[in-house]
Image (cartoon, rainbow, N blue to C red; front, side, top):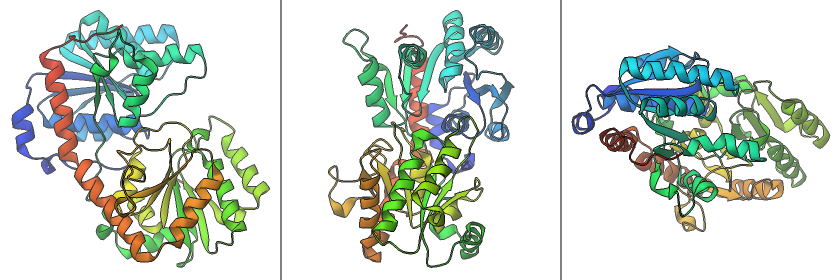
Length: 417
Protein backbone atom coordinates (compact mmCIF):
# COMPACT_ATOMS: atom_id res chain seq x y z
CA UNK A 1 0.00 0.00 0.00
CA UNK A 2 1.50 3.34 -1.00
CA UNK A 3 2.58 5.66 1.75
CA UNK A 4 1.07 9.12 1.92
CA UNK A 5 3.03 12.37 1.99
CA UNK A 6 3.79 14.21 5.19
CA UNK A 7 1.48 16.96 6.40
CA UNK A 8 4.13 19.61 6.03
CA UNK A 9 4.06 19.08 2.26
CA UNK A 10 0.68 20.84 2.09
CA UNK A 11 0.34 24.61 1.77
CA UNK A 12 -0.73 26.38 4.95
CA UNK A 13 -3.33 28.31 3.00
CA UNK A 14 -5.43 25.12 2.75
CA UNK A 15 -5.67 24.92 6.54
CA UNK A 16 -6.23 28.64 6.95
CA UNK A 17 -9.03 28.81 4.40
CA UNK A 18 -10.90 25.66 5.39
CA UNK A 19 -10.05 25.19 9.07
CA UNK A 20 -13.00 24.12 11.20
CA UNK A 21 -11.70 23.87 14.77
CA UNK A 22 -13.82 21.72 17.03
CA UNK A 23 -15.41 19.78 14.15
CA UNK A 24 -15.17 16.04 14.80
CA UNK A 25 -15.75 13.58 11.95
CA UNK A 26 -16.41 9.87 12.43
CA UNK A 27 -15.07 7.71 9.59
CA UNK A 28 -16.37 4.13 9.44
CA UNK A 29 -15.10 1.30 7.23
CA UNK A 30 -14.74 -2.50 7.42
CA UNK A 31 -10.95 -2.79 7.77
CA UNK A 32 -7.69 -0.84 7.79
CA UNK A 33 -5.62 -3.18 5.74
CA UNK A 34 -4.95 -3.07 2.00
CA UNK A 35 -8.06 -2.16 0.00
CA UNK A 36 -8.94 1.01 -1.86
CA UNK A 37 -11.30 2.14 0.90
CA UNK A 38 -8.61 1.40 3.51
CA UNK A 39 -6.12 3.68 1.78
CA UNK A 40 -8.92 6.16 1.20
CA UNK A 41 -9.55 6.37 4.94
CA UNK A 42 -5.91 7.26 5.59
CA UNK A 43 -6.04 9.92 2.89
CA UNK A 44 -9.29 11.32 4.29
CA UNK A 45 -7.75 11.55 7.77
CA UNK A 46 -4.76 13.36 6.32
CA UNK A 47 -6.93 15.91 4.51
CA UNK A 48 -9.31 16.52 7.40
CA UNK A 49 -6.57 16.85 10.02
CA UNK A 50 -4.77 19.33 7.80
CA UNK A 51 -7.98 21.37 7.61
CA UNK A 52 -8.42 21.58 11.37
CA UNK A 53 -10.95 18.78 11.80
CA UNK A 54 -10.67 15.94 14.33
CA UNK A 55 -11.07 12.60 12.49
CA UNK A 56 -11.99 9.41 14.36
CA UNK A 57 -11.73 6.12 12.46
CA UNK A 58 -13.80 3.08 13.49
CA UNK A 59 -12.80 -0.18 11.79
CA UNK A 60 -11.15 -3.55 12.28
CA UNK A 61 -7.48 -3.13 13.10
CA UNK A 62 -5.00 -3.64 10.27
CA UNK A 63 -1.60 -2.54 9.06
CA UNK A 64 -2.79 1.01 8.34
CA UNK A 65 -3.72 1.82 11.94
CA UNK A 66 -0.32 3.42 12.53
CA UNK A 67 -0.89 5.71 9.53
CA UNK A 68 -4.17 6.93 11.03
CA UNK A 69 -2.35 8.06 14.17
CA UNK A 70 0.56 9.50 12.18
CA UNK A 71 -1.78 11.82 10.28
CA UNK A 72 -3.60 13.07 13.36
CA UNK A 73 -6.55 10.70 13.56
CA UNK A 74 -7.88 8.59 16.41
CA UNK A 75 -8.52 4.87 15.95
CA UNK A 76 -11.46 3.05 17.57
CA UNK A 77 -11.59 -0.75 17.02
CA UNK A 78 -14.93 -1.91 15.60
CA UNK A 79 -15.90 -5.12 13.83
CA UNK A 80 -17.82 -3.36 11.06
CA UNK A 81 -17.13 -5.97 8.36
CA UNK A 82 -20.43 -7.81 8.81
CA UNK A 83 -23.75 -8.49 7.08
CA UNK A 84 -25.32 -9.89 10.25
CA UNK A 85 -28.37 -7.70 11.06
CA UNK A 86 -27.89 -8.08 14.82
CA UNK A 87 -24.24 -7.03 14.65
CA UNK A 88 -25.13 -4.16 12.31
CA UNK A 89 -27.62 -2.84 14.89
CA UNK A 90 -25.12 -3.36 17.70
CA UNK A 91 -22.47 -1.44 15.74
CA UNK A 92 -24.98 1.31 15.01
CA UNK A 93 -25.55 1.72 18.74
CA UNK A 94 -21.80 1.92 19.35
CA UNK A 95 -21.40 4.53 16.61
CA UNK A 96 -24.35 6.57 17.88
CA UNK A 97 -22.78 6.63 21.33
CA UNK A 98 -19.48 7.78 19.81
CA UNK A 99 -21.24 10.56 17.91
CA UNK A 100 -22.91 11.85 21.07
CA UNK A 101 -19.87 11.52 23.34
CA UNK A 102 -17.43 13.13 20.86
CA UNK A 103 -19.99 15.55 19.39
CA UNK A 104 -19.35 14.37 15.84
CA UNK A 105 -20.97 16.48 13.17
CA UNK A 106 -20.68 13.89 10.38
CA UNK A 107 -20.35 10.15 9.80
CA UNK A 108 -18.47 9.15 6.66
CA UNK A 109 -18.84 5.52 5.51
CA UNK A 110 -16.31 3.91 3.18
CA UNK A 111 -17.82 0.54 2.31
CA UNK A 112 -21.23 -1.11 2.27
CA UNK A 113 -20.86 -3.35 5.33
CA UNK A 114 -20.00 -0.40 7.54
CA UNK A 115 -22.40 1.98 5.78
CA UNK A 116 -25.50 0.24 7.14
CA UNK A 117 -24.44 0.76 10.76
CA UNK A 118 -23.25 4.29 9.96
CA UNK A 119 -26.52 5.20 8.25
CA UNK A 120 -28.62 4.02 11.21
CA UNK A 121 -26.37 5.89 13.64
CA UNK A 122 -26.55 9.07 11.56
CA UNK A 123 -30.35 8.96 11.42
CA UNK A 124 -30.52 8.35 15.18
CA UNK A 125 -28.23 11.26 16.06
CA UNK A 126 -28.92 13.79 13.32
CA UNK A 127 -25.30 13.69 12.10
CA UNK A 128 -24.60 14.36 8.44
CA UNK A 129 -24.13 11.07 6.55
CA UNK A 130 -21.58 10.78 3.73
CA UNK A 131 -20.52 7.78 1.63
CA UNK A 132 -17.57 7.18 -0.67
CA UNK A 133 -17.66 4.94 -3.76
CA UNK A 134 -14.31 3.45 -4.79
CA UNK A 135 -15.57 0.92 -7.32
CA UNK A 136 -18.69 -0.28 -9.11
CA UNK A 137 -20.43 -2.94 -7.04
CA UNK A 138 -22.07 -5.85 -8.84
CA UNK A 139 -25.87 -6.10 -8.68
CA UNK A 140 -26.56 -9.63 -9.85
CA UNK A 141 -29.82 -9.94 -7.88
CA UNK A 142 -32.42 -7.91 -5.97
CA UNK A 143 -30.75 -8.58 -2.60
CA UNK A 144 -27.45 -7.14 -3.84
CA UNK A 145 -29.21 -4.08 -5.21
CA UNK A 146 -30.92 -3.44 -1.88
CA UNK A 147 -27.67 -4.06 -0.01
CA UNK A 148 -25.72 -1.66 -2.22
CA UNK A 149 -28.40 1.01 -2.05
CA UNK A 150 -27.21 2.18 1.37
CA UNK A 151 -24.30 3.83 -0.44
CA UNK A 152 -26.66 6.34 -2.06
CA UNK A 153 -28.45 7.30 1.17
CA UNK A 154 -25.79 9.81 2.08
CA UNK A 155 -26.42 13.52 2.34
CA UNK A 156 -23.42 13.67 0.03
CA UNK A 157 -22.10 10.85 -2.16
CA UNK A 158 -18.42 11.01 -3.06
CA UNK A 159 -17.28 9.20 -6.22
CA UNK A 160 -13.56 8.83 -6.94
CA UNK A 161 -14.03 9.18 -10.70
CA UNK A 162 -16.45 10.40 -13.33
CA UNK A 163 -16.97 6.76 -14.34
CA UNK A 164 -18.29 5.85 -10.88
CA UNK A 165 -20.37 9.02 -10.64
CA UNK A 166 -22.06 8.13 -13.93
CA UNK A 167 -22.61 4.54 -12.81
CA UNK A 168 -24.30 5.70 -9.58
CA UNK A 169 -26.50 8.15 -11.48
CA UNK A 170 -27.49 5.55 -14.08
CA UNK A 171 -28.40 2.96 -11.46
CA UNK A 172 -30.13 5.06 -8.83
CA UNK A 173 -30.95 8.43 -10.30
CA UNK A 174 -34.58 9.34 -10.98
CA UNK A 175 -36.43 12.54 -11.71
CA UNK A 176 -37.76 12.51 -8.16
CA UNK A 177 -34.62 11.87 -6.10
CA UNK A 178 -32.26 14.01 -8.24
CA UNK A 179 -29.37 11.98 -6.93
CA UNK A 180 -26.88 13.76 -9.18
CA UNK A 181 -27.23 16.86 -7.00
CA UNK A 182 -25.71 14.97 -4.06
CA UNK A 183 -22.76 13.45 -5.96
CA UNK A 184 -19.30 15.01 -5.79
CA UNK A 185 -16.29 13.68 -7.68
CA UNK A 186 -13.15 13.76 -5.53
CA UNK A 187 -10.20 11.69 -6.82
CA UNK A 188 -7.45 10.08 -4.79
CA UNK A 189 -3.96 11.55 -4.63
CA UNK A 190 -0.58 9.99 -5.30
CA UNK A 191 2.72 10.36 -3.43
CA UNK A 192 4.60 11.99 -6.29
CA UNK A 193 7.94 11.82 -4.52
CA UNK A 194 7.75 8.11 -3.88
CA UNK A 195 6.42 7.37 -7.35
CA UNK A 196 9.03 9.28 -9.30
CA UNK A 197 11.24 7.35 -11.73
CA UNK A 198 14.17 9.65 -10.99
CA UNK A 199 14.04 8.66 -7.32
CA UNK A 200 14.34 4.92 -7.92
CA UNK A 201 17.96 3.79 -7.86
CA UNK A 202 19.17 1.23 -10.36
CA UNK A 203 20.02 -1.12 -7.50
CA UNK A 204 16.35 -1.32 -6.51
CA UNK A 205 15.33 -2.28 -10.05
CA UNK A 206 18.10 -4.90 -10.20
CA UNK A 207 16.93 -6.32 -6.88
CA UNK A 208 13.37 -6.58 -8.19
CA UNK A 209 14.55 -8.40 -11.32
CA UNK A 210 16.51 -10.85 -9.17
CA UNK A 211 13.47 -11.34 -6.95
CA UNK A 212 11.32 -12.16 -9.97
CA UNK A 213 14.18 -14.07 -11.70
CA UNK A 214 13.98 -11.90 -14.83
CA UNK A 215 16.74 -11.31 -17.38
CA UNK A 216 17.71 -7.74 -18.22
CA UNK A 217 16.33 -7.86 -21.78
CA UNK A 218 12.95 -9.38 -20.79
CA UNK A 219 9.84 -7.28 -21.41
CA UNK A 220 7.81 -7.20 -18.17
CA UNK A 221 4.01 -6.94 -18.35
CA UNK A 222 2.97 -6.01 -14.81
CA UNK A 223 -0.52 -6.72 -13.45
CA UNK A 224 -1.23 -5.44 -9.94
CA UNK A 225 -4.19 -5.80 -7.60
CA UNK A 226 -5.92 -8.50 -5.62
CA UNK A 227 -6.09 -11.92 -7.29
CA UNK A 228 -9.82 -11.91 -8.01
CA UNK A 229 -11.99 -12.87 -10.96
CA UNK A 230 -13.29 -9.32 -11.43
CA UNK A 231 -9.70 -8.17 -12.01
CA UNK A 232 -9.52 -10.28 -15.19
CA UNK A 233 -6.28 -12.18 -14.59
CA UNK A 234 -7.60 -15.04 -16.73
CA UNK A 235 -8.02 -12.60 -19.63
CA UNK A 236 -4.34 -11.69 -19.30
CA UNK A 237 -3.34 -15.38 -19.33
CA UNK A 238 -5.21 -15.97 -22.57
CA UNK A 239 -3.69 -12.81 -24.04
CA UNK A 240 -0.23 -14.14 -23.11
CA UNK A 241 -1.06 -17.30 -25.01
CA UNK A 242 -1.88 -15.22 -28.07
CA UNK A 243 1.35 -13.24 -27.71
CA UNK A 244 3.32 -16.50 -27.82
CA UNK A 245 1.41 -17.65 -30.90
CA UNK A 246 2.17 -14.31 -32.56
CA UNK A 247 5.88 -14.86 -32.01
CA UNK A 248 6.57 -12.27 -29.30
CA UNK A 249 9.86 -13.14 -27.62
CA UNK A 250 11.44 -12.38 -24.26
CA UNK A 251 8.36 -11.28 -22.32
CA UNK A 252 7.02 -12.18 -18.90
CA UNK A 253 3.67 -11.42 -17.25
CA UNK A 254 4.02 -10.77 -13.52
CA UNK A 255 0.94 -10.87 -11.26
CA UNK A 256 1.57 -8.89 -8.07
CA UNK A 257 -1.26 -8.91 -5.56
CA UNK A 258 -2.82 -10.46 -2.51
CA UNK A 259 -4.78 -13.68 -2.56
CA UNK A 260 -7.08 -13.74 0.46
CA UNK A 261 -8.14 -17.32 -0.17
CA UNK A 262 -11.84 -16.49 -0.33
CA UNK A 263 -12.38 -18.35 -3.61
CA UNK A 264 -10.91 -21.03 -5.81
CA UNK A 265 -9.94 -18.49 -8.43
CA UNK A 266 -6.18 -18.80 -7.89
CA UNK A 267 -6.35 -22.57 -8.45
CA UNK A 268 -8.48 -22.06 -11.56
CA UNK A 269 -5.95 -19.51 -12.77
CA UNK A 270 -3.08 -21.97 -12.43
CA UNK A 271 -5.15 -24.61 -14.25
CA UNK A 272 -5.62 -22.13 -17.09
CA UNK A 273 -1.89 -21.36 -17.17
CA UNK A 274 -1.14 -25.08 -17.53
CA UNK A 275 -3.87 -25.58 -20.15
CA UNK A 276 -2.67 -22.66 -22.28
CA UNK A 277 1.01 -23.59 -22.10
CA UNK A 278 1.99 -20.23 -20.61
CA UNK A 279 3.88 -21.48 -17.54
CA UNK A 280 7.11 -20.07 -18.97
CA UNK A 281 5.71 -16.53 -19.37
CA UNK A 282 3.51 -16.17 -16.27
CA UNK A 283 4.87 -15.36 -12.83
CA UNK A 284 2.71 -15.08 -9.70
CA UNK A 285 4.73 -12.97 -7.30
CA UNK A 286 4.15 -12.24 -3.64
CA UNK A 287 2.94 -8.77 -2.64
CA UNK A 288 5.69 -6.19 -3.11
CA UNK A 289 6.71 -3.54 -0.58
CA UNK A 290 8.72 -1.49 -3.07
CA UNK A 291 6.04 -0.84 -5.69
CA UNK A 292 7.97 2.09 -7.18
CA UNK A 293 10.75 -0.35 -8.10
CA UNK A 294 8.17 -2.79 -9.44
CA UNK A 295 6.79 -0.14 -11.82
CA UNK A 296 10.32 0.87 -12.79
CA UNK A 297 11.03 -2.77 -13.68
CA UNK A 298 7.91 -3.05 -15.83
CA UNK A 299 7.73 -2.27 -19.53
CA UNK A 300 3.98 -1.78 -19.39
CA UNK A 301 1.23 -2.03 -16.72
CA UNK A 302 -2.07 -3.78 -17.49
CA UNK A 303 -5.52 -3.66 -15.89
CA UNK A 304 -7.99 -6.17 -17.36
CA UNK A 305 -10.90 -5.45 -14.99
CA UNK A 306 -14.28 -6.92 -15.83
CA UNK A 307 -16.36 -4.39 -13.85
CA UNK A 308 -16.13 -0.64 -13.28
CA UNK A 309 -13.12 -0.02 -11.06
CA UNK A 310 -13.53 3.67 -10.44
CA UNK A 311 -10.04 4.92 -9.88
CA UNK A 312 -7.26 2.37 -9.39
CA UNK A 313 -4.31 3.81 -7.53
CA UNK A 314 -2.04 1.39 -9.38
CA UNK A 315 -2.84 3.05 -12.71
CA UNK A 316 -2.03 6.50 -11.32
CA UNK A 317 1.15 5.22 -9.66
CA UNK A 318 2.25 3.57 -12.91
CA UNK A 319 1.65 6.76 -14.89
CA UNK A 320 3.49 8.77 -12.23
CA UNK A 321 6.40 6.36 -12.82
CA UNK A 322 6.22 7.20 -16.56
CA UNK A 323 4.93 3.78 -17.50
CA UNK A 324 2.38 3.25 -20.26
CA UNK A 325 -0.83 1.63 -19.01
CA UNK A 326 -3.13 -0.64 -21.00
CA UNK A 327 -6.62 -0.81 -19.50
CA UNK A 328 -9.96 -2.40 -20.24
CA UNK A 329 -12.81 -0.01 -20.96
CA UNK A 330 -14.17 -0.87 -17.49
CA UNK A 331 -10.81 -0.58 -15.74
CA UNK A 332 -10.58 3.20 -15.95
CA UNK A 333 -12.42 6.15 -17.41
CA UNK A 334 -11.10 8.98 -19.54
CA UNK A 335 -10.46 11.05 -16.41
CA UNK A 336 -7.83 8.48 -15.34
CA UNK A 337 -6.20 7.31 -18.58
CA UNK A 338 -6.10 9.46 -21.71
CA UNK A 339 -6.74 7.47 -24.87
CA UNK A 340 -8.58 7.82 -28.22
CA UNK A 341 -11.16 8.93 -29.12
CA UNK A 342 -11.16 11.35 -26.18
CA UNK A 343 -7.69 12.63 -27.11
CA UNK A 344 -5.60 12.37 -30.30
CA UNK A 345 -2.71 9.93 -30.55
CA UNK A 346 -0.10 12.53 -29.66
CA UNK A 347 -1.74 13.11 -26.24
CA UNK A 348 -2.40 9.56 -25.05
CA UNK A 349 -1.12 8.26 -21.71
CA UNK A 350 -2.22 4.67 -22.37
CA UNK A 351 -4.11 2.24 -24.58
CA UNK A 352 -7.60 0.81 -24.10
CA UNK A 353 -9.26 -2.47 -25.06
CA UNK A 354 -12.71 -4.05 -24.71
CA UNK A 355 -13.22 -5.76 -21.35
CA UNK A 356 -13.07 -9.59 -21.37
CA UNK A 357 -11.51 -9.60 -24.85
CA UNK A 358 -8.13 -11.33 -24.70
CA UNK A 359 -7.59 -10.86 -28.43
CA UNK A 360 -8.01 -7.10 -28.06
CA UNK A 361 -5.61 -7.06 -25.10
CA UNK A 362 -3.02 -9.04 -27.02
CA UNK A 363 -3.42 -6.64 -29.95
CA UNK A 364 -2.89 -3.62 -27.70
CA UNK A 365 0.26 -5.18 -26.21
CA UNK A 366 1.65 -6.00 -29.65
CA UNK A 367 0.91 -2.47 -30.78
CA UNK A 368 2.75 -1.04 -27.77
CA UNK A 369 5.82 -3.24 -28.18
CA UNK A 370 5.96 -2.33 -31.88
CA UNK A 371 6.25 1.37 -31.04
CA UNK A 372 9.71 2.96 -31.26
CA UNK A 373 11.27 3.54 -27.87
CA UNK A 374 11.07 7.37 -28.10
CA UNK A 375 7.28 7.13 -28.58
CA UNK A 376 6.97 4.78 -25.60
CA UNK A 377 8.95 7.23 -23.47
CA UNK A 378 6.80 10.15 -24.65
CA UNK A 379 3.61 8.32 -23.60
CA UNK A 380 5.09 7.68 -20.17
CA UNK A 381 6.17 11.30 -19.73
CA UNK A 382 2.69 12.52 -20.63
CA UNK A 383 1.27 10.12 -18.06
CA UNK A 384 3.36 11.61 -15.27
CA UNK A 385 2.43 15.15 -16.32
CA UNK A 386 -1.25 14.17 -16.22
CA UNK A 387 -0.97 12.76 -12.70
CA UNK A 388 1.05 15.76 -11.49
CA UNK A 389 -1.65 18.15 -12.66
CA UNK A 390 -4.76 16.29 -11.50
CA UNK A 391 -3.92 13.87 -8.67
CA UNK A 392 -1.45 15.76 -6.52
CA UNK A 393 -2.08 15.88 -2.74
CA UNK A 394 -2.64 19.64 -2.60
CA UNK A 395 -5.43 19.63 -5.18
CA UNK A 396 -7.21 16.64 -3.64
CA UNK A 397 -6.94 18.10 -0.11
CA UNK A 398 -8.56 21.33 -1.25
CA UNK A 399 -11.45 19.42 -2.86
CA UNK A 400 -12.05 17.33 0.26
CA UNK A 401 -12.00 20.34 2.58
CA UNK A 402 -14.23 22.39 0.31
CA UNK A 403 -16.78 19.57 0.33
CA UNK A 404 -16.64 19.25 4.12
CA UNK A 405 -16.99 22.99 4.57
CA UNK A 406 -20.29 22.69 2.70
CA UNK A 407 -21.73 19.71 4.53
CA UNK A 408 -20.69 20.78 8.04
CA UNK A 409 -22.06 24.29 7.54
CA UNK A 410 -25.44 22.98 6.33
CA UNK A 411 -25.93 19.48 7.77
CA UNK A 412 -28.74 17.29 6.52
CA UNK A 413 -29.86 19.62 3.76
CA UNK A 414 -30.04 16.88 1.09
CA UNK A 415 -30.94 13.90 3.26
CA UNK A 416 -32.36 10.96 1.32
CA UNK A 417 -33.81 7.68 2.49
